[in-house]
Length: 312
Ligand SMILES: Cc1cc2nc3c(=O)[nH]c(=O)nc-3n(C[C@H](O)[C@H](O)[C@H](O)COP(=O)(O)OP(=O)(O)OC[C@H]3O[C@@H](n4cnc5c(N)ncnc54)[C@H](O)[C@@H]3O)c2cc1C
Image (cartoon, rainbow, N blue to C red; front, side, top):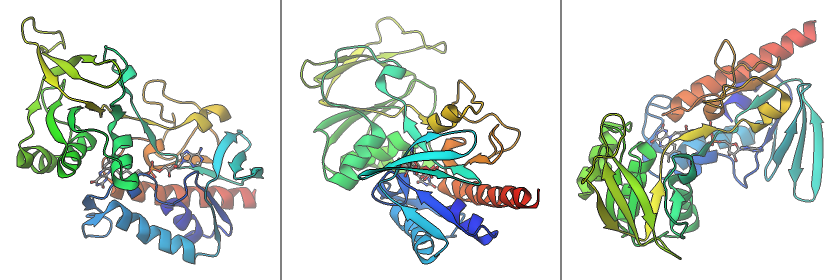
């Protein structure tokens, strides 16, 4: 939305905003905690409030056509897009394309955590969507893997919903999350945080029954005799995000194989002229304010590109 609005302000006459979901706003819609917008709006908003400020402006702008439930399934280097919307496969050729496709979560298999494959193991962001948007509580006793901001926020969220959060297990020596989140989400709720520990095994047949935890040394090797078990029926895995760039890959753009981000000389650029990337698709951001700032820049870059194309 920020990129679309900035492109319009920079003189682009027609913007088509394609969103696979039923709502605009992306991940912000499920982030009902405060902490958004301190830099951009100089006030503290929830995720939905932050998204709504942009959605209102988008709706009022007659140069932006919004197409919801529209899943882009194909992109070529010539900026031809195909997207599925209910009942139709549409095709469009754009003068410039900005990909703002966000991230997906790393899963249990990617760390990996050994053990059986019972129900009750969820990526933390998925659990956040279940709790905050769909009204499902995933379990009664939880262990959280990873102490980044998403893991910390979900520990508090689950505790507020009456789930007994038995531990947050972190393989590193310290949390990568904000200090305020460690204090407000764990310490204030008496939730133990185990640094330099990992889940060695998930146990359970139909449903998670317990996890085995072990302490590791500085080289992440298990320390013999340090293991213990925690009974739980739910494991939330919060171990990082991967930029969602399959469309860019399909179009033949260069991607960093490790980070899955576009390889280009500047933020928002890709190796394909006229195709830009912004937000978490470009790099994983901590704060939405910086997503907005750089996405506005992407909108202006696309407008410049279109201007240059028109003059050529
Ligand atoms: C749990 C959590 C807590 C956070 N807490 C804070 C906080 O307290 N303060 C803060 O400032 N920031 C916070 N952030 C970070 C910030 O919210 C995000 O970085 C930012 O909102 C990401 O925006 P985005 O537009 O790049 O991606 P997203 O919000 O993920 O949006 C991507 C959109 O693209 C759509 N899409 C993807 N692929 C396609 C396709 N093929 N076709 C059509 N549509 C597609 C998706 O449906 C989605 O709507 C938090 C993030 C998370 C996950």
